[in-house]
Amino acid sequence: PTYEFCKVEREGKLTIVTMNRPDVMNSLHPPANFELEKVFNDFSSDPTQWVAILTGAGDRAFSAGNDLKFTASGGKMEIPATGFAGITARYHMNKPLIAAVNGVAMGGGMEIALACDIIVASDKARFALPEPKVGLAAGAGGVHRLPRQIGLKHAMGMILTARHVSAEEGYRLGFVTAVVPDDQLMI
Image (tube, rainbow, N blue to C red; front, top):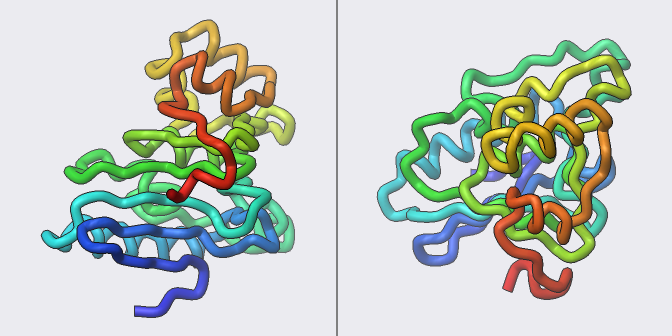
């Protein structure tokens, strides 16, 4: 199938999913969320596909999270039952998901990465949960996944202050699995 907001490639038993909205830093709106839900439904039900890598198009962002401009322009924010990007509430996935974070992972973008089993980050990647700056909370998993992965005090420091964290600091804190040079992320 062809998709409007993502690209899907298969290499043997590997599925590579690329969020493809680089003009808005791969932020997601309802059509993109529902499209990704279908992609991950297909991946989950395909016995020939064993592992998925999720990344973002372009060199600026993995995902800037929710498309706030879409919402501000009157668009209704709808999220599939499987959650933001079709994965943040997909609690019964029985195949590994790898986030290949190639730039900023902010808000929902960081929550997408946290929903994956492994986070491999480019040395240029940056992470944050900036929701407090717009009067929101990281409700797509950030407030419950991050404390479990790095401990309560470090997580609350990020969640309550919207502090940005480099890939290297994310590795030291324990939510990033590995940091690689930017040009080697997808090798």
